[in-house]
Length: 386
Image (cartoon, rainbow, N blue to C red; front, side, top):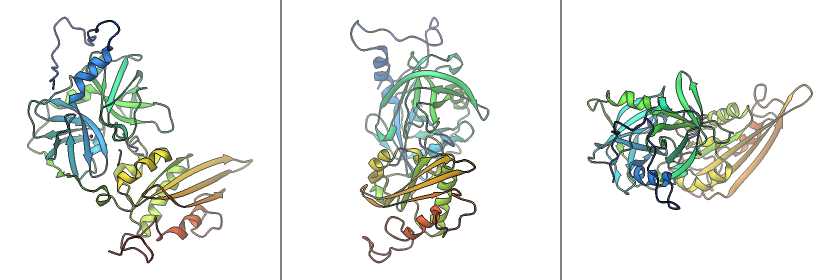
């Protein structure tokens, strides 16, 4: 999901080759053959054909989606999926896992990236013409939201807009962290978009990058400057991400407070499990996932704890009252402590020891269980010093 103050949509935690050629008589958006009356719909037929070409991309940071566009192992996904990755593996729908993954191209402007795996004769998804997409068209999104592989959701093209000079297709097809990089399909079974980002605190306000951006880049890809990722093997998650996972949601003041919390903890030497775009605000940002979802995936992230922040603001006669809630959970989802601070000035003039400031509520817990420093553990910790 885009520099969506990530939320990823990255989730922490994955043979029939379809031709791109059309009969000369086919319209730009071909309609699928209808099945016998009372049996599977055209969508089910399409999903059965394209699923083998939808992949799960696992990095040292998160899980995401992608799809094969050339049978020699060319895969398209999002820039934000690969931007901070140091290790990577690609899992096919067949269950095969490719650990030698190469980055061919990555563009932060249109949030597209192309990967290469060492394979041949792979199934592919045909690419449509996104110039032929219209508001109101039916579409289907395929991906791995929250790690649930091969999930499909249907919807409409609900808008065609510009985002910082890039054309984007707005869709009502449901997406969650992990959906990033998945294909958006038209009724002809062609990819017309690549899932990129969503608007937080909105219902199904999801955005894809038009497939014509992909088509325009395919012929310029080069293997000569490909970057090889470190091979990602099946390690215990807790060996990948230690420390506290900071997340939450709230009013307009949330992002500033969220960033301040990261700075305060980092300055105090606390190990922070958040990676890359998880520190900001788009579909990859786990900072905007519901608390129940965060606790559900917490054991898979490898983080030692979760610090959940909620910010509420209410207007008074001449000021805004800001309430900041903190809840800290251990790796099993058991609550360790919670605090609440209500203050007209949540930031700015407040100091660490302001009697009503949120910083004064956070400070006593720094260095204790749940907010441990990077170097060693304090006495009484469940784990020995390192």
